[in-house]
Image (cartoon, rainbow, N blue to C red; front, side, top):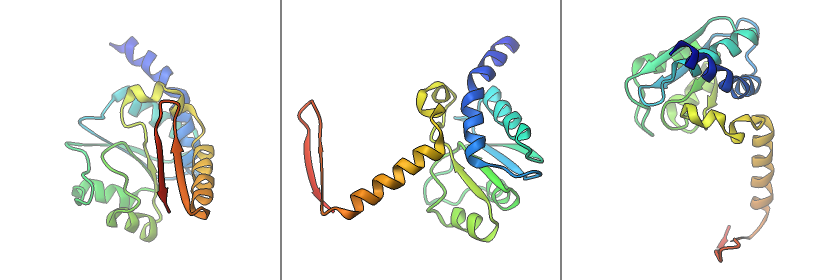
Length: 168
């Protein structure tokens, strides 16, 4: 219902604002939001679009694909063209693009900023994880990787009795 969409949009607002702050679109940037038939959610797409426009982005396009992008399989032509034409691309569809050839090409040759959506489904945007500042989350991740990389062994334990040690 229309009222249901408004309520959902309000619930998504904080998470969408967080994602847009991380993406940091510049004035006039072209932004593409990619969702597939499994992840498409109109209130979410529109809330993210409005957050991009409020941040100063130029045109914001919503691309809906039939199926998700499968890892190491080239995405369809509209998806590839969207990466080429956009300054910022929010990808709700399929695997991360950073390590795949067309994702690397989009970043290096076209200057596209690819924003990985860890929250592929609308319900995930109402979690605390989605509202946690992405820049801080990635900073913690980078710091953790730096610390682990300096070690020779990694040991993970839990209160339930898990005790795993691996060489690095």
